[in-house]
Amino acid sequence: MINLSFKDINPLICGWEKCECSHAFGPAVRSYYLLHYVLSGKGIFQNKSGTYEVKKGQMFIINPHETTFYKADDKTPWTYCWIGFECNIDIPPVMKNAVIDAKSCEHIFTSIQNMSAIENGREMLLCSKIYELFSVLSYTDNSNNNRTLEYVLKAKNYIDTKYTDDISISQIAGYLSLERSYSSHLFTQHMGVSPQKHLVDLPLSKAAEVIPVYGH
Image (tube, rainbow, N blue to C red; front, side, top):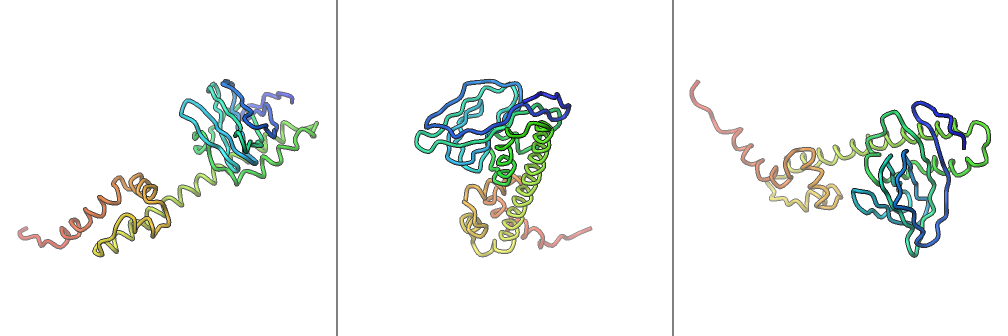
């Protein structure tokens, strides 16, 4: 592959591999971004933040100058596709995570599998694929944020209308079809208080609204 030194996004490497059981790479450090999308199977990915299990439909992200290690599963080894590039523009915020769900990007990586057969214009085509990847990830991240806000507003509305019925946090989570601890985390993150505290404080605030005020 030829390094054409594009200014904003500069593709460097791409490829795919069907790994053997327990096949490992690293610890290693690279000077560029390297993204691996898991087409099938699973494995583990390690960076300074911790160890993550990565499976089909997910992508693990190696940042420049970061020490990483990754290994295929002992029984169900992964097949993955990768692309490495230098980047001088802002990456999508979701890429700050070590591992992300990226099923919506599978078609991009599948097309990269066939890049080795292209001789002329391959680097420009890869550049366009990375831009497309950024676009999909940015849209997905924004959609996830909107979905999260929708959950929080539904939870708040449920509490505000049902608080006199002695409802529980488990009932709220069930109404949202979410796991209890996760629904509580989302609510606290966006509202600044836990759903339990909001549930306790609400009758007090409602009572305060109807207390008459005398004098002037």
